[in-house]
Image (cartoon, rainbow, N blue to C red; front, side):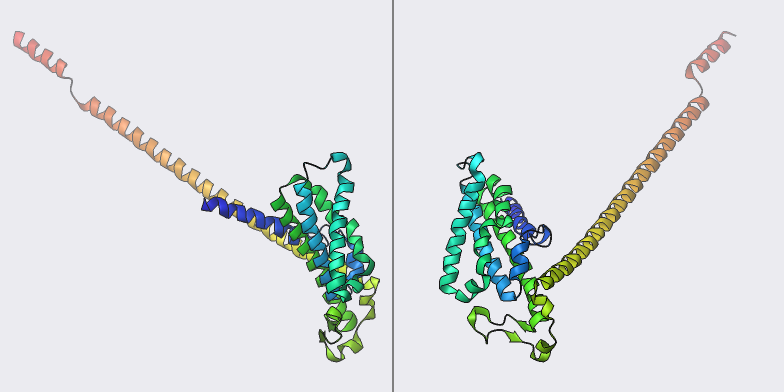
Length: 281
């Protein structure tokens, strides 16, 4: 029972980890480029957009999975869009009420979550064919991966473009970190669209290089393990062959010894006949 639960936990955790790392929607799948490049001018904007998309992803995946056997196949895409739009509207209303500064910063890109290809793709590719629990975990993993990418890009662009970190969050101009005179040497290009493309390209190149390096190490490790296994198998075969040859030689020696012993032993019948012949004489 414990083994089954442990295996299930590992399987569920892989669903979440897949969305964050192996199938990151921005760095690996290259999805959602419009909000990624437009919103990630600061860490706070990236965090806000990422969390909003995560909420919509989790909720829409859960509802699509729950209704997967009810929604007709011919109208599934409009149905998915309607479900996503419902949750986007709810998130938009909550942000307008409780975080108006973030609502203003996200602007038109907040309602555009409705047609975000990440959310629609997960509803079509995963939630429509899997159970509710797995669909929720998939939405959570993809949402966290999207959030991580936006925050990382936003931190770099804000630091290099303005010399600040999370400044102006929640509408408070004093909130955040100012890096002294660094703002005097900031590169304004990083808060422009060109800076978004540059930052994204450099990050993707670095991540791909690290992934290739890790894959190469795994391949070398597998080759080394295969070589060790082959050597062990070969050593075992050689040992078994040597053992069989030794047993064969021993059996042959015993056979020769038995033959020689039989040849040296006189035949009892022949001796009795000789004695009878001598008695007659």
